[in-house]
Picture 1 (cartoon, protein in one colour):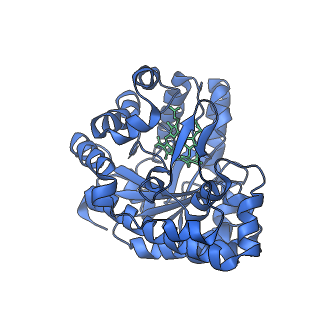
Picture 2 (picture 1 turned 135 degrees about the horizontal axis):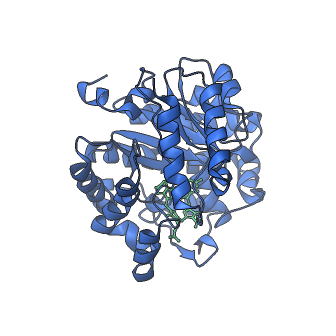
Picture 3 (picture 1 turned 90 degrees about the vertical axis):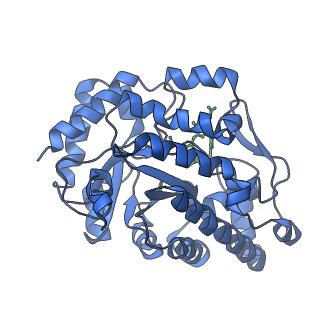
Length: 346
Ligand code: CP3
């Protein structure tokens, strides 16, 4: 581990080194629960904000100005690399992402481009450089991408899905097309994460948000080889967090796929999850984001429970089990961060 990593509790915890207190950051820490975010959103669309480096940098820093967070995460979206691959989508009001031409056949896969991040997502790389400059010596910056399965599911379903019938349909009926698609997405993600690291990201997180819809057998057969390829392809330069939701049955397989840290949601007991994973890997999580709507007492009690379950073992990064929800009370977020620091102080 480098001298630079040693300055930062978040990076130390990723490497399972002891820290003076448990570091905390929150998935989707920049977003609609902040009034300064909503104010910008009145003027710009979400994608406009992602594609404007100055605005993306500004939004990344909004929660950092308010709270004592131990890491920043670049403001962007897992869908950003899909547009330069040749896929058009929009964020429809209240609906989430909508893809106009969902990908269903081999010829659709053949048409996908392998991106050149320096050209195709230069706005993201520039945003990373700006944020790094602003944060120098304060806290580290996390880059991220979606995992191959989660991105494939958006491409095939055309948006968010409940049952993933079309995605699983392609997996089962047309394995060659599935493999060709997963290969191509994996190649793009390796380049995409490497470019973020070269631009200054000091850790990266891979979000496999929807992979929990799969059986362990299917994960192993259809997904694990590609998540592994991405994680291996990115290399060991910076710590990598491998996150999924509803993944309690997949934890051991996710570890096989790789990552320095496994991110878990709130549906598992974090102590048991770490036992199963083994203590030779770090863990991130796992407060239910809905707890932040409860009283300060409840938040404190739940934070204490999580800290108790991991027993102060080096290698725990406190986080929510999934992204912070719109309408979350801002003062509760501040309270959580302060309580985690206070209760874990060693
Ligand atoms: O964590 C952060 O603060 C960094 C920013 C970030 C966003 N999206 C900003 C965002 C990150 C890390 C993501 C990842 C992302 N995007 C995931 C994986 C994490 C997860 O939640 O499981 C997924 C599945 C997406 C795709 C996506 N982006 C959806 C489904 C939606 C619409 C649903 C929603 O929450 O509105 C988005 C939009 C989005 N991404 C917003 C933000 C702040 C809201 C945009 C707005 O202002 O309207």
